[in-house]
Amino acid sequence: MTVTIVGSQLGDEGKGGVVDVYGDPADVVARYQGGDNAGHTVVHDGEEYKLSLVPSGAVRGKVGILGNGCVVNLRTLFDELNTLREKGLDPDVRIAERAHAILPFHRVLDGIEEDVKSESDQEVGTTGRGIGPTYEDKAGRRGVRIGDLLDPDVLRERLEYVVPQKRALVEEVYDIDVDDLDDPDAFDVDALYEEFREFGERLEEENMTVNAGAFLSDAIADGQNVMFEGAQGTLIDIDHGNYPYVTSSNPTAGGAATGTGLGPGVVGDGEIIGIVKAYLTRVGSGPLPTELGGVVGDTPGYDEETEGRNEDLATYIRDEGGEYGTVTGRPRRVGWLDLPMLRHATRANGFTGLAVNHIDVLAGLDEVQVGYTYELDGEEVRTIPSTTEEWGRCEANLRSFEGWPEVDWSEVADEGYDAIPENARTYLEFISDELDVPIYAVGVGPGREETVVVENPYE
Ligand code: IMP
Image 1 (cartoon, rainbow, N blue to C red):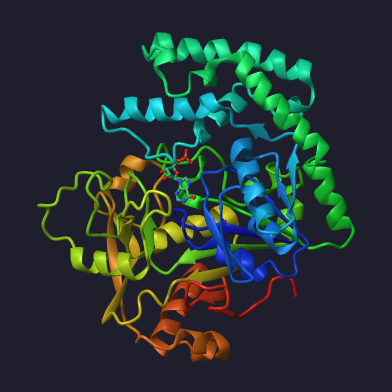
Image 2: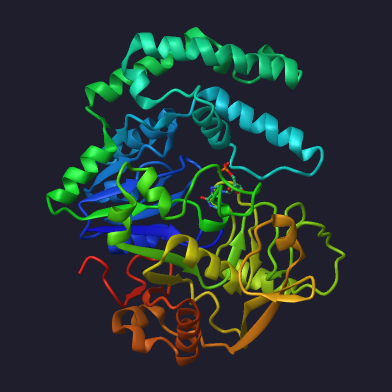
């Protein structure tokens, strides 16, 4: 049986915690898209692990797969594996031979393009990990796949084709001398060949590469439980997100099929769980109709003098929820829950269950609001419009809910759903009714044990 975990909003919904809680009965945890732009913290036996590539289940003794839809930075992967091994773990991670390798020049190009875009305020606010440029090369049929690293002749041939193009792009389009860059070797065929051939040898020695689709379908045929772990979220999906402020892959549930090599029926036969944060956060630019307050440089058109925004509330929620970038410390933009966004995500993913996180963060507020519909050019709309420009013109029609008190959330987690304060349950049931999807779990604190499990998808 399969369970797919998908972010329903803009990433950072707390997917890692749900993967952790529901992952216990899973034998295999597979990622199907993205790369080291994700970030999750796993606490295991009292030890904290910060991972961006290794699927969190691998820390708990599951087989971790990086599917063909992933882009893999082997420097990051081996760093993470080395760290885990130093701490006495022996994670079993396999990489699809069809996955693409992030090469050092992809990172450099990610940075250059963001700089150029920022001159006209068009930057996406990427994580700078080379994700977009790697997927570009994949679609452009000039990428280097993990399987190519295993064959010295193929690797050299691929590099000899692609590297001169990238060098020319930097020098002739962006007018930057490659030798002035921090990492000029990123554009040197021989240096790249040497480093990546070594990675290829290590992958081979450690028997780490697989035909992911075949591996996973055998596991399913064997009666094993498989979890597909989505990274990022629906609204930063390249197709269903707010283009161009998106990542370059498909975090939505369809990606679990194309990004692993299994049929959509296999994914659809299982459960698809939408992870919802009880409010909204956003990293980087783009519209956010329910935004409270604003973040200079990220909120479009925002400056600190702007009136009518609810700064104190935004700061309160940001601080209570620790809504600062894990790596950069950058404050995340904060808003109320947005139902048009969740209606869009429910349709695009076909959720069979919801896990709503962080209801504890909103505790103690007198009133909690929800963006119920939008007003767009004089019309009421119930879902996200297709263009980002239209979305940017949407104003949220808010609905109000009575707040719920601060309580002992660990006790609530022990006692179960009925111990959740009544007003919070009213809020949860409203979301579930509006989306016509049952609540499977409620996050009431940051720890794995601070989750109220209503439904276990593998049972
Ligand atoms: P990229 O994935 O680095 O190309 O970044 C593209 C967009 O996706 C940017 O707005 C990033 O902030 C956003 N993004 C990428 N990964 C994550 C994530 O794990 N959580 C939240 N936002 C993300």
